[in-house]
Image (tube, rainbow, N blue to C red):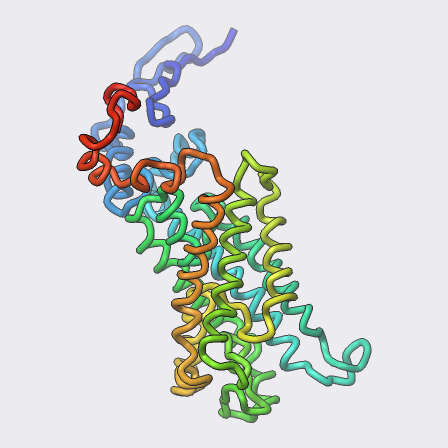
Length: 373
């Protein structure tokens, strides 16, 4: 016979379990009841506050945390409550942080060690394909880190999911901020790690951008080939971003073959392939957070205003073109392949209920289920 007894946990509709209103303690043959102190936090009240704050931020009211974890005492601590509120923000921040550290780190190692005779093979520590490996691994691991938030890591991908997959628009600003800051900080850590190598290549305190022969600014953000006209710069980023989004939707489509739990591995091959096939002309940024954040960091540490003016003020293209390309890629997949009802393409008037209600008298209402628009 057990020598303790407690009230069973009662499941709530949210998936969070309530705590017993009192605790029964049996010691030997005596039985006593301990009523909870009025100073102890009410779990229902705490959960209600948590849901309210998260809803105002545009996040799902219930954090992506296992139910049994929410019952642990440490979730009454201040930092634990802050973490529950901003869990997705932190996930996107650190996912992008990891992605940029691996990506920028691979470029730094290849560029700074070029022609180094002490390397195996006597020609530096890595080739161009090493960069494709670095970015592919960085994206894969970043998605593993940011899985609870969706693992978007890219404002253009987030925007496209809001547009076509009904991701709440309120989440876009907070995810955008997290991704931008993650890219900025990740590039900053890479710079701090390789500052001695940069000084060795460029000279102490000297920082240059392409087309300088000793330029190291390309470690952190993309610069186009000098012969490219602006239209080709934009199109190069556009087509890479289109492929990126089209294949991401395919990998997430369980009604197709889909990738399931192997989605991060599928992303690795996707990013590696894009770098191997479309990376030469503009550096295949495809991501504002991966390019603008590190570019701003490089400006802050001394690379100067040329980070903006290089390539005929190229800097705006990897900010704008990925949005255009990702939206187009998502549009193509949903129009021609995707059959799920969570796409706005497969919803009346692209999911715009106001337009649908306004046009309802013009539709054959007999074909609509009762009470549905």
